Length: 287
Image (cartoon, rainbow, N blue to C red; front, side, top):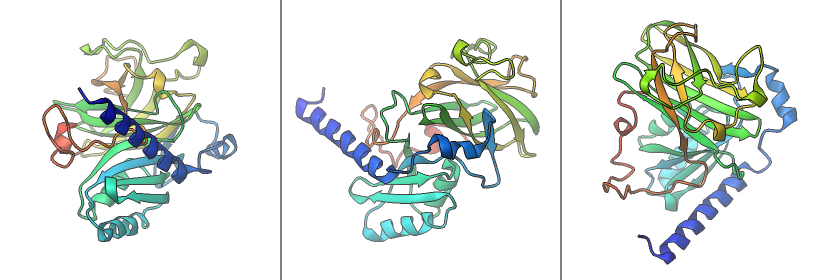
C-alpha cells in the first residue's frame, strides 16, 4: 500500500498536471456561439479535414533532451488544426490543444521516430468523466472508439475499425454492456427519456462507410451526449445500415483518463513500462 507521503505526492502531481492543462486551454474552450457554426445536426461526421471541436490531448512521448522537444514541436506545427503545444520534458508529456483527430496527431508524433502513447483527453474542467474508450479485440473485427466531453452538451467521437466487409455499416451506442450473447444482449439503441426524439435515438451514431480493405476511420461530434452516462454501456456495429438486426460485434464502453490524470510510466501489476507496452496490449491489429 502506498505511504501517505506517496499519495500526497501523486495528488499534487495530478493537480499540477490539470493546472498546466488549464493554462494551455484557457480561452479556447468551445462556446455556444462557436458551436452554432457546426449546424443543427445531432451527429456530424467530419471528413476531409473539416473542423472538429477543440480538445486538449495528452501524450507520453519518449523524449530525452531539448532536441527531442524541438523535433516534436516542429512536426506538430505542420499539422492542420493544432492551436497550441506545450511540452513537459521532465514528465515526457506533450499537451496538444486543437481540432486535429487523435489518429493524425499520433501519426505525426511517431513520424519523429519517437514512441508516443495517448494518456488523456478532454478539457480541463471538473467533469465527473471526461473521456471513455471502447475496444474491439476480434477475432474478426478490430477497432477503437474514443469519446471525449467537449462541454456538457457536446461530445467528440473518433473511431478506427478493420475487418469489416466493404460498404455501409450502421453503428450505435446500446443500453447495456452485457456481452454474454454478443451484440444481441446489449439491448436497444441508447435513448434516455429526457433526450428521446422521434427522429433519432441519442445513441444512433449513423453509418460507417468501409473501404475495400475493410477499414474505416470516423471522426465527428454528437450533441446532447454526456460521456458519464455511457460508461458500462456498449458500442455495436451492424452488418448493414439496419440497426434492427442483432449486430456483428460489440464492445463495452469504459472510462478513460482525462487530462492531468495519467502520468504513470510503470504498470505495478506486471512491471511493464509504458514504452514496453505495444498496441497489441490494447487492440490486436494496426487500428
